[in-house]
Length: 405
Image 1 (spheres, helix red, strand yellow):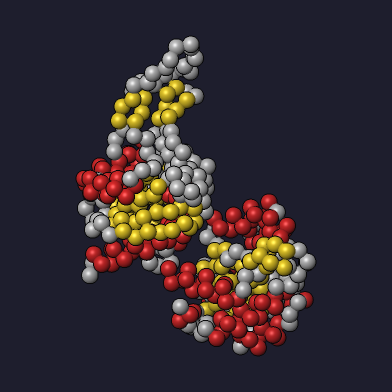
Image 2 (image 1 turned 135 degrees about the vertical axis):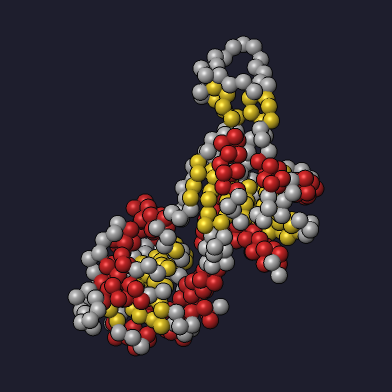
């Protein structure tokens, strides 16, 4: 994996915290991996470690002052911003995150970050209570939306004496995360991925509707991972309380099953991969009311009619699209999933038993079985929905490659 860093132009941005000593080790390991490393240090970082240390480890000049123009033919922070292929901010303090998130450019580090187009990785380090502060959380969420990639801090004994989450992740782990991300990010490059997520709502009257327990978490995870792998992503989502982290994902918000049907069909023909993770209502009230229905002492009966089967309709018209469905079951889940796969002309189906602990709606985790059109099963054990999404794409990418051999 480290070969990915060979000859990579890596800019290490070091801000002022006690964890600066780990940035020295990170510089050494990056250099040993073959990367061309240049270091920017804030004024506060220089209070912990001398720039001379980083110069010796990187074998390159260290940048500390916006106005220290080492080459009069170039503007240093612009030249450095254009030069970098990868930027790593480590350690990233609460103060630096605040400045970067709000677009401030008052030193060499922040002005360079404003100008760079490189992939940026952020490794925070701070007191556990600072890391949990709402302002810090919102700044990190904001930067994530901007496309910054966060490497979460580890938990343990902190320099301040507290024990908790906030210590800078170990340099080896930082490098492992970056090399994996760099190796993965072009796997779906050039592919258009269409994903559905969340529930639909079928109106009864202005205040009531029929829906289900879906939160959209699995579909959103699939969208985020696809974007990270280089795909152009369109996400058609029902009413959910989730926000897109990657601003490059195109989100289309819908309410009803009919809305979702229309939106999916509008974008289907341009898609390469289609994953229908939404829990679409199978039925809707045949009659709706324009005014709120008043309660009475009598029993209430609704006549329901079928909604359009979106997945089946896509299976009937698909050409070169790789079409994936989801089967949320409570019994005979594998048998029911196989039947759905064949009946709806799918390339693969993701089957999960939603009654199983850790795999139900609203959970941050999932347990699924990936079943391809040859009825070959691949089981994914309990993991976060993001990890499950990554595992799904591994299977999809392999299937697409095998198809074109």
